[in-house]
Image (cartoon, rainbow, N blue to C red):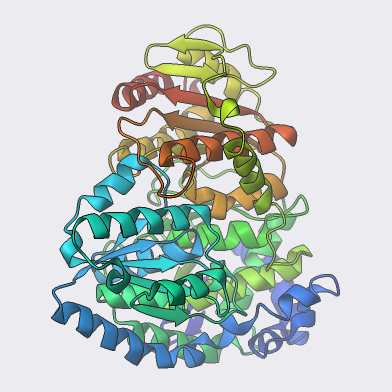
Length: 549
C-alpha cells in the first residue's frame, strides 16, 4: 500500500507478518506518531533521548530546506566544467559517501568515492587526471581521520601536478566546524554548510548527499521533488502510511526473534532500479538501531536468489527494494528521493518500537579511540604479533577458544563453530574494494557454507555504519577480519603515519574492542593479496555445506 503521486509503496506479502504488524500500525496511527515525527517532536523516544532528538530532526523537512542548494550546485558545476574540470572525487565516510554513491549510480553518473584507508585504492584515485579533478571533502567536523588524510594527500598531489589545490577543493561541513575554519584559512574553492541538526546517516538530502552528486551531474532538483511528494504521505496518521507499515513489520518480526533484516534490490533495471541502495540502508538501520543489546542487523545481499535471502530462517526478514519476488516478506517501491525519506522515517519509528534512541551512536567512538591509541604507540603495530599458524600466503591470528592449528579450512571450520544459534558472521575486509573486489564474493559462499546470516563490510568504511551494531546490538556475532600487505604505501603529509599504518591500526583497534566485549575475532592477514584471496576461496569451498552435514 502507498501513494500513487510519489510512487511510494510498502507491501507485506507474508500474511502472518502482516497480521502481526497490523496492531502496531494501529497504535502508531492512534498515537499520531507520523505527524509528530514530521513536525519534529523530540519526545517520541522518551526523556533520555529527548536532548539528542531535539537537535537531530531537521531531516524531515530537507525536501524544502535544501532547495537553495540547487542553484549553488549548478552554478559551481558550470564553473568547473567551463574550466575543463569534470572529474569529481569524494572524500567522505559513512553517510557522507554512501548517499552520493547511490544517487550517482542510480543516475549513471561517474563519481570516484574515497571511503577507505587502503593505499592502493587511494593511489588509483590519484592516478586519474588531476588537471580535470575536483575534490569534495565531506565531514561534519573535519576531524574524521580518513577524510583528513585524503585531503592532505590530494592537496600535495595537486601542488606537485602544478594545479592550484585551493581552487580544486570543495568542502561540505557543519557551520563553525574546524573544517569550515580550515577551508576559510586555506582559501578553498567553496564551502557548503550543511544543516547541523541532521545526523550523518540521515543526511542524504542535505549538502552531504546533494553537493558531490550534483557536481557529478545528478539531477538533485528531481531528487528533492521526489522526496517532497513522499513527505506528504509519510507525515500522515493513516494505516496506509508506508513508513508505519515498514516500521511495524520490522518491529513485529524483531519481537518474534527475527532481528536481522536481509536487503536485496529486485528490480532488474527499470526506472525505479536503485543500485547500491541496500548499502546505504545498511548504515542507516545499523547505526540507528544497534545499541543497548538490541537492534536490527541489516544484511545487504547480492540478489533475491542469494544465500541469506532465498533461504532466510526464522531469525531474518527478507526485504525487497523493488518487486516482491522470491522469499521477500516485505517489499518497498518508489523513486530514490521517496525511498530515502521512507527508510529514514521507518528507521526512526522502529527506534521507538525498540525503545532506543535512533540518533546517537554510543559505541562508534570505542574503535576510533583504540585505533588512535595504536597510532600513538607504533611499537604495537610493528609486527610484534605472532600468527597462530601460517598457511601459504595467509597468516592466521586465532581468537581464544580456537586452536588455530591445521589447515586454513580446519581453522575456519573451528571458528565458525563458535557462532551461537541464530548468530551471524561479519566479514570485515580491510582491502582495496576495487583491485580486491573479488573479496566481496566471500559473503555468499560463507553464508552458504555456514548457514549463518553473513554480512560483508569494507574496512574501515563499515566502522561508520555496522560497526555500531557490532558493539552495541545483539551480541551474537562472530567476526572474520581480512587484512593484507600493501604493495606500495602512501605517506600522509604532516602526519607521523602512512595510510597502510592507519589501516592496520583501524583493523587491530576494532578487533580489540570486539574481543573486549567477548566476541570472537579471527584475523587472516594476506601476505600476498591475490594469492591469499584465491587460497581463502579454496579453503572455504572445502568446508562442507551446512545442509550436507
